[in-house]
Structure formats: structure tokens, C-alpha cells
Length: 184
Image (cartoon, rainbow, N blue to C red; front, side, top):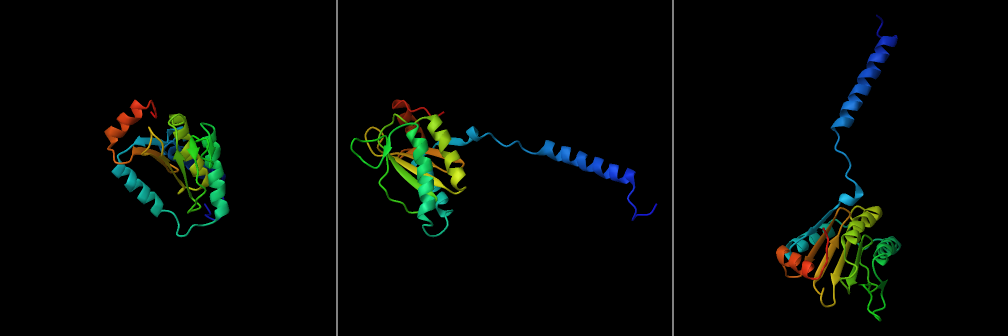
């Protein structure tokens, strides 16, 4: 048998082996989790600070492009507006307030003035918006009005952390429950 001449039997064997290997490898792969299975966690104030520091350290140096941040901001604002009022005019007080400041093209922030719009559906939507912008994009939202003053929601493209300034995880969970905020 001449090795330089292609034989039909050899080609079929190679194809058969390749298909078998492909079927085996596909069967061994982990399934891709659905978009809605991203993690939402209630965390202590200390854990929140660590997570924010780690995520911020992944941002590239310098503020980047204002226009890129503007696209992120508009995308986040669009999702927030499905759940409550969003504006940078504090009169009347909106559900989500934005001051107009920006510091990085992959970071956005809002003040939360009401507990009304905070729910699992909103929190599930945030990582999807951030991931569509950039894998390192982050969003921080802080409660600034009673009774949610001190509430912190920090979102990345893979998770949402919910905490309360100065509180441990259990105290935060209790506070959320008392306010009727359900995130699980």
C-alpha cells in the first residue's frame, strides 16, 4: 500500500474517528449556564468592600472614552427605567438618581432613593447589561434615603452583591426582609 495515495477506506476511518472524538468531547463539555442563573448574593460590608476593590483593580488605567461610558450609562438607565423613575433631577425625588459624574468608561453608579424598584428581576438584568458592554464593567448603586440609606448593590458582568454599610450578612438579610425586598 503506497502511503502517498489516498485510500477510501483510510479516509472513512479517519472521518469516523474524528466524528467519534467530536461526539465524545461534546458530551464531556459543561453546558453553558442560562443567562438568568447569574449569581445574586447578600454579603457583609467587609465582603462588599473586597469585591469592589478587586473589580475596580481590573479596570484598565485611565478613564477611557467618555462616549463608551455614555453607551454603558444609557444601557443601564434603560434597564433601571423599566423598574422605576431615573433622572438626575432630584425634584421630585426619583427611584434612581444620577449626579452626572463619571470616572471610567466601564463603571457607572446611581443613588437609590426608594426600595420600591429593588427586586430579583432587576438584579438578574444588571449583569447581562454589563456583560454586553464589557466583561469588566461594574455598577454601584447606593441607598441614600430612609429607610434604605446604607444599602449597597454592586454588580459585575457575572454577579450582583447586596449589602448594607457596616452590617454583616445576617443583619443585611434581616433588614432586606423587614423592608419587603425579596431577591431570592
